[in-house]
Image 1 (cartoon, one colour):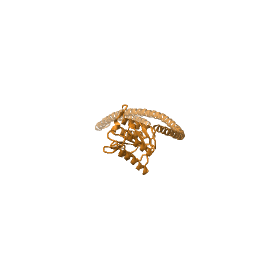
Image 2: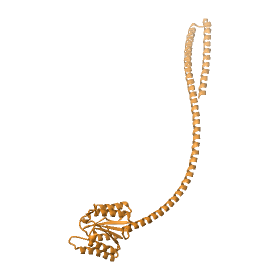
Image 3: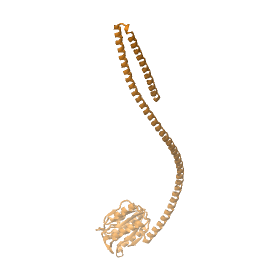
Image 4: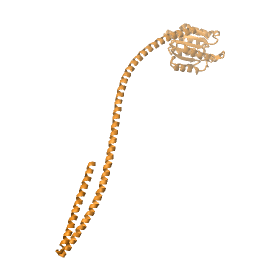
Length: 352
């Protein structure tokens, strides 16, 4: 495009040279004709001479106009050439700038290609490391699995040893206390009559019994337990509680703590409620012989004993441990009924 513009300028200069030559030739011809007409004026008709002079003047005027137009055209052509040269200079500068940008881009492209190659190499290295890490993970998982199996085996052995020790210790504690029977399902039958509120050395029989039951539930090998509390009515704790679950044990003890001693002593009804749990062992806490208003004491005692015999004949034979509270030495009626119950079921009579 630049070369084409330069060529066009050169062609313009050639045209101007040609036009100036033609103008010079025309002026020479006009001058020659003028001289010729002056010389021949003496022989030419005056009218024709005047006409020729008029035509010559018109020709000179036209020639002047043409020369003026040529000068204006040349001036315009010069301005155009200046613009063309300015555009050529701009295009040359733009081409230079474009070449510089292209050079910088080529440099950046090479840098990017280098970075891309490095990234590919890094990715290959990362994949290799991941493969190694995966194999190491599998190896560590195998080791962990083996370690877990070993730990589980050691734990079971340890738990077995602890269980054996706990059983031995629980059995020792039970033997020291004097309790008998199977402690898988135990029902604590607790006297809640008014006499249980009597205090011994500042502590009521009722609160002493609650503390004893709480300690035995924590330290004796009791698996499941329920509580039957009685006075002249009977109240139960509900379904058997699993004692090795602290929440169940706390609920059971909460039921007991919420009771208050009052009323009489309906032992037979309490035993009937306890037998409904199908227990393996019953622990009976009481401070007096069976007693209800309007009932003969001997009848009340026989009623409790006969109930136990009847159930034994039917095949239900839980061990009954009787815990005598208070001044049981001076209450032969209470002592006799409790000893009869324990003798018939193979339980123990314990005084506190």
